[in-house]
Amino acid sequence: MRIVFMGPPGAGKGTQAAILSKTLGIPHISTGDIFRANVTEGTPLGLEAKKYMDAGEYVPDGVTNAMVRDRLTHDDARPGFILDGYPRTVEQVAELDAMLRSAGTKLDAVIELTVDIDEVVQRLVKRAAEQGRPDDTEDVIRRRLQVYAEQTAPLIAVYDSHGILTQVNGLGEIAVVTVAIAQAVNAQ
Ligand code: ADP
Image (cartoon, rainbow, N blue to C red; front, top):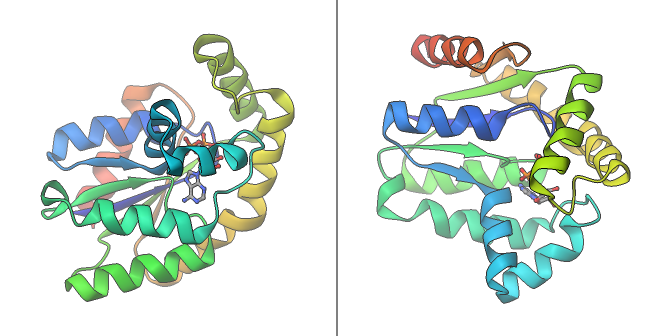
């Protein structure tokens, strides 16, 4: 299955995508994780991405699209994948469509995790205390939520019009959310 996870920062995409990845035996591809690994390793991609990430801005589409295009050609992604954090812009949606079309495949499901903003800010502030991510400061969190609302939230309507979107309530216990996602995926 080819699945996209959507939802604002702090919705729990990473947590749930990792669980579903184990259940389905397909890779969890998080663009944020790939960028952070490159930052840690000090690669040219990491140095480029860090400027944007630390400010809560999106890395330019050209950079992100090339990275995902490459990742999706790896053998482990042939039977399917869970994309977490991509696509995030209208241009990325078009690019992903083109990548899949040229591979003769398509998306099976888009899962949107819905949460309210107060809950999300609380979770991110807590994560900041635990993990010390440089983009989890309050100012940057606010900017990330704003960028999400402006650039990414509109994509939900696009996928809804393709008939592959399911909204799942991201509030509540992790295990409860996991069950709701599994049901949504099975229904597709
Ligand atoms: P979160 O969704 O919690 O903000 P992520 O780990 O998914 O965090 O992403 C962290 C940062 O990585 C983003 O704020 C952005 O700078 C960059 N990034 C991740 N995915 C993309 C993408 N698809 N397009 C552009 N930038 C991205």
